[in-house]
Image 1 (cartoon, rainbow, N blue to C red):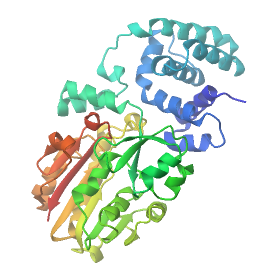
Image 2 (tube, helix red, strand yellow):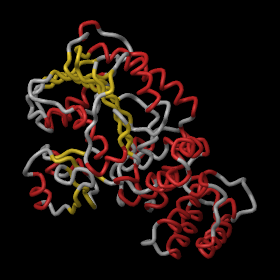
Image 3 (cartoon, rainbow, N blue to C red):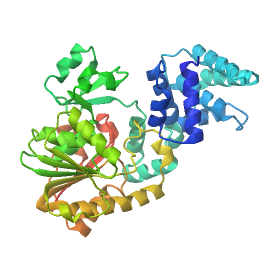
Length: 424
């Protein structure tokens, strides 16, 4: 039976060879496996820090011709040596040697042993040639952020997005906290909304936690929670949530309106509509209808129909790299340009669904001028929207710029997020 480290190496090799989203591959490969949390930690960490790990490995070897399995074994091992203090170096190295022998590559055991021992001896003396290598962030992203924020803020952003992603639970019931206590689940208070969310610690499988299944809480980052507060739903409002899957913001808006706002949640694919329905049903959210809708195609039946419209548009996702580390290697500036065309198309249609004088909220989970502040300018100049006042908690006051708020991930240890509010 394969050990957890060997399983991790196989998963990384499969992702590298066949592609696919890391979270989906993990879900399939971890079925029935022991040590799920350790494997998940090592796989995500090895992907997140890949540029750094490869630099360290190449600096300690005389060849670049390393078999994919062996390279991933080295990545997994170096990740543990560099970032997991709880694992003794001797155990990491010995296990790597055992794995290479078990895979009938015993002739490489001396190579693996020597490289890892050398790295362990010199790991505190490593000097990195660039921000990109030190924080395993592709050069184009680093350059983009330096141009936007300067070098100091860019380093803080990189450091924050390399932190381990926490499980943020948005409380959906007054009984939620007591139930978590009853279930012996440890938690700490939220950073932005300390009375409305908690960070759960040490939970291996959320889907098996009774209080989650019963809808007492749901997983939603604090930065994403702010969207609902900015839109500010009231009882009696008619609200449209475009690109709504999986339903976190939809259900939150219903909660904020005491389930007395009429909300329509749309998305393009049927399986996403099913996700929304599943979420709102589990959380007991009511007065919500779902509709399959291609947001890039104008639907005349929705014109001037809603008091408030939310467009949480598809984006490059540069604000959620701690949760989806592979995004950093799969996106480019060309991708941002292409997705911005889609964003403008969606927004141009969505604005038409807002009643005159109504509210329009635009949001992304990315940190990109093109997708964020340039879009604000475009919406005002080309679509005739009027900048509206945006209210945020005290901890985020410094992030507000006119009608928008850009949450940099290091401000409150959240995802990076952008929200803008307008009147039609």
